[in-house]
Image 1: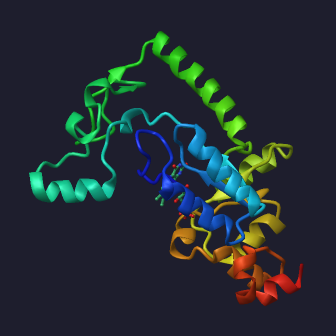
Image 2: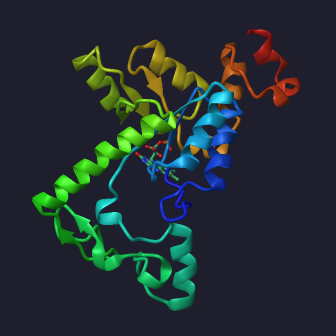
Image 3: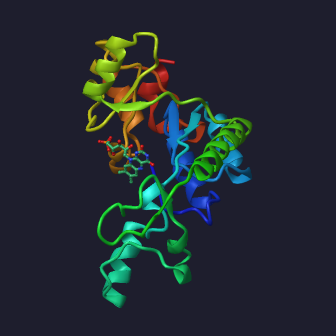
Amino acid sequence: MCQYSSDYGHATDWHLVDIGGFATRGAGGINMEATAVIAPLKRIVDFADTQAAKVGIQLAHAGRKLSTLATWVKSSVDRTRHVDTSVAFANEGGWPDNVFGPVNVPWSKGFPTLKEMTEGDLQYVGDAFIAATKRSISAGCEDKRGCKLVPFAEAVKKAHPDIVVGAVGMITTPQQANDILAEGKADLVSRARELLRDPQFVLRAANELGVAVKPAVQYKRAWPGVLARM
Ligand SMILES: Cc1cc2nc3c(=O)[nH]c(=O)nc-3n(C[C@H](O)[C@H](O)[C@H](O)COP(=O)(O)O)c2cc1C
């Protein structure tokens, strides 16, 4: 999940604590937000590895949402400068005059004015994706194969049984997640907001469904039921 907390594209302590925290609480796989794939990411992946958690990454080009403020920064900025815009200006670390997208139509009101990409720009982005993929692999990231809302995941799975499909969206209970897997609607289930509401979700789900999941050894004494099944 995008955290808007990197330092000019570099992962920070926030990412280590955030992603590391899920790894210590039984998550089998964690999909990181898109960010520059360099040394700090390897530290996070290595930490997750000590907890037997796999880390994936979503490589992305922010396109028409480039050079915008984090939502919480925008709302505090609005209060002081009274400008209804999401644009991060140059003195705020943004680059609003250098935003490229597929078409020169802003994402919506209050977003940067775009320059339409040329074929050369597309080639540049394509090469950057290839380079980022290579850096992700050397940082130890796992391969991720698409992530769809449950009805789409089910349809893709039906049409292409050999493709590994993940489902995401409004999956909030352990039973719901388990049913999606048991009924073959998807091969893996992701949660976004539910994990923000309850970072212990995986351990709670394991308790409820009667399966084994390993929390960090330091937390063992709080989860005897989960561990007894290992
Ligand atoms: C804070 C936050 C950041 C997100 N960032 C991303 C992202 O970087 N890439 C992405 O594909 N989806 C992102 N999403 C969407 C989620 O992956 C997910 O599709 C959506 O929240 C619905 O799932 P949920 O009901 O489990 O939250 C984000 C969602 C939230 C709440």
